[in-house]
Image 1: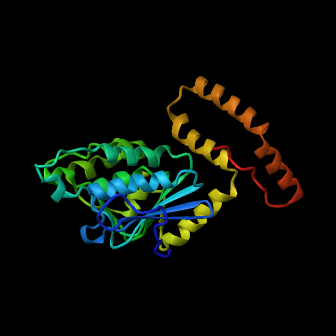
Image 2: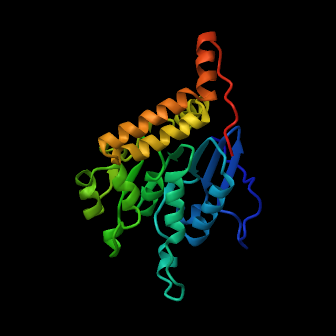
Image 3: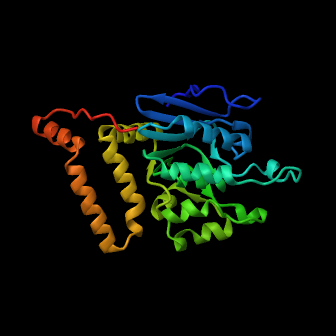
Length: 265
């Protein structure tokens, strides 16, 4: 994947942007590019990440990737140690929530090490594609804090018992272990090619159907069975009566690619 050039306008910062956005054919690619501090979660990076997510509204897929040898090193400890500035984690919470709750699928494209808070950004994405040599570590306890905010997305992906050792010890673990416990969805030798294939598959589906499927994956596991069946029966009937379904079934019968109606704003 080539290094994207930001097209979301000048950031409201005196410094050069360190989070970049590219919008092409329904795909939004957001790149973390703060290499001197290994893409640590500075105030600037989190602010610009949220700005890019604003600008990506309406995309059909969002890819979160990085430049440099680390996806994200976690909190910016120099900033956190500055007692003259108040602590405010609301921007981090907002970014994680937006990656989790975006209407479209979100994909983390990880070619380098992930530490501490970086696991939260990664785990907030629907799909997580990592290069085979990548390592991970939840190092918070080793600096006297806990993996608090990021536990929310992480423990929605992974059973607590399967990641307890990593959280309690801070010991690193590899991509195959991350795949085995469900923290990542794809381990590959070519992250860019795998992400391209996933985006092509997402873009081949009807936008409303893909959005509804994301909601199903997020919400139905927590529903009571009777409630889930009632809700899903209503959704199934509604969608089979939709213009998308009419076009999809006609295209299938006619052996042609479907032409999806534009999604509602």
